Length: 394
Ligand code: AMP
Image (cartoon, rainbow, N blue to C red; front, top):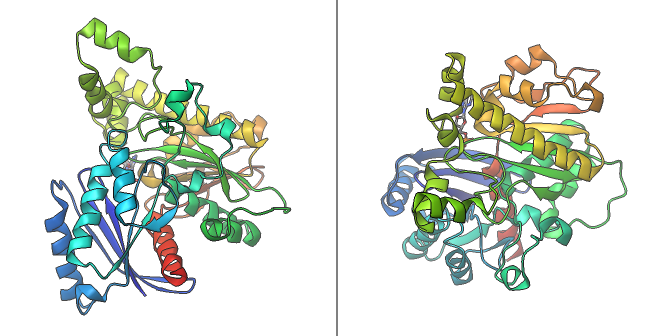
């Protein structure tokens, strides 16, 4: 079964084509476009390339397209990407302005070009659907809560892959199977030995999730992908009183404040140098104090959220790092795990230093009670698997 996974970023379009057969997934092709302003020409070019390279006889040869949709109003899970999904994306377009309009455009484009190819949306919020009300509720008036303002959590496909893969690496097939079947079977009962994972997805956008026996208990992102850790250009957590105060003192509108929090904040806003962790580290090494502060704030924020999940889960067996920064920045990983021997975390400096550029491995010392892992991100595989299941079931 040929399944295309479409990943529509605010300025990029990436894709992977899988040939799925039961549990096996063969990656046939992958590619992408940067600095994208319109998705339709990219989608057309991609389909042409896949046919020219012989992966598809014609575009209609595709069995399904999977979309990593971000946030839907009153909708989550793995569902057919139909009008209901478009409405749900539209209902929260102001909350995820960099993501929702892009996915709506992409889904519409496939709808008009390949009307007979099944379209499936896997929401990034789906992995958090079993969070407790105590974990997802904000202390706001009822009328606000009725608008759907609550914590949702994001990067669900990435954290779900970590839930599966970390369990496999520890030979915990029971937990791996539970995580893998989650969207079909639900969490059900679990009576095995606990496996608690603090999953750190650190990239252009970053979040942490607490994962207990394959099921997420919460994430660092809240109502929007704007909250939690400082992101490349986005603010992360901020006291809500700062916005009216800044509007008044700087004489700017709420819209302008929102723009600055989305585009000129995060690592870029703090460092004044770049939104890229590599440039920031280089500047910090050359003595730039603001760049140093940006790095320190990111590390502090990761530790803050990791500590929260450690406490909520009553401990952890695994701390896992993934995505661009998590997979490559050995210094940051060491700083996140520094001085935690009292909690049972001990990094192996050599293993840590060599686990970069797509390598997978355990970077904690053999006598570390908590295993620290690096697992390359593989959200597309999670989406392809869910789309495959959706096709089998419908
Ligand atoms: P992603 O969103 O997973 O593609 O990650 C992109 C981010 O990874 C960029 O913002 C880079 O700053 C970061 N990154 C990539 N390579 C490195 C590296 N060697 N050291 C630190 N950060 C890196």
